[in-house]
Image: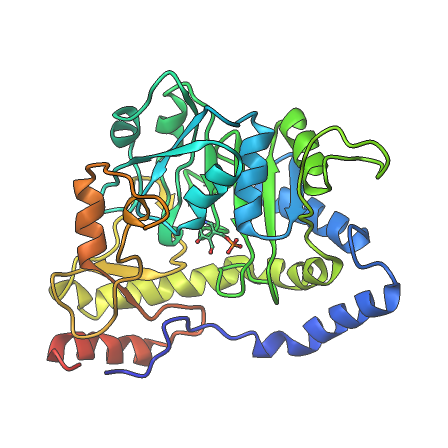
Length: 346
Ligand SMILES: Cc1ncc(COP(=O)(O)O)c(C=O)c1O
């Protein structure tokens, strides 16, 4: 068994700059919804090429708020993959809607227009494709289905499809800045992004109890804000994101070049996609190292209990293995992982 870490990324080189940013906030006296959040929202919106970014407490709330911003509520169905983190479904349920699970293409680990179309009903109010592991779901084809689309881009900060950033492809999108993500903060954080002024306005209202002025409450919302310290941290790290993603892509290329493909089916992307390898997940019936990242799909979780028939999802759940990945993964470490896969050692 190799001791290369699964998440091979360290913020050590940024400690001084992060400490400085945190100190600036600590001395400012502004901790919630102040100038750092406002500046980060503008910087992240500009980076993605969208009109609005609304900082919220985490990526799960971001999805709930984005769905409600699009008018999703009780009686509505939201189509999504089952092969994702549980939060994707949980967020729709918290919004009052019913998740309807569609299958994925096990080669990309993402939904396709065909798998989504197969479960659409007159009650479908939104589609939530997940850019899983940093790979791109085919959002333009999904938008042709005529239902609002919300990208779950929690794992795909910086990924692009035909040059357009994940997050700028649909009616709205959501991000998580959980510490293991490609763009991390030092705790929980998330964002809703959209070009739609109305959705943005509603999301801003919902993150603060459904009020703009603390006096009049026009919605039942949430207490879900990105805080000033996390925003200041994100402002230090956002300018590094593209170079970090390049390093992840170089590590993925090294896995391929050093022969991992002889032991497992390697990640595959749709045409025009620039994968950012939040995780490096391969498929194999048996592999000496790595472990299934999502082993029980969401539709079969005890709290959900759907009887959906999803063969691509079941295959992915049975055969996926996450191998070490991160901006700090070296070629020697990649070689070590490939050798461990080749030797069959455990
Ligand atoms: C695909 C996906 N959706 C949603 C979330 C939820 O984000 P958070 O943990 O910030 O609530 C995550 C992150 O864990 C995720 O990976």
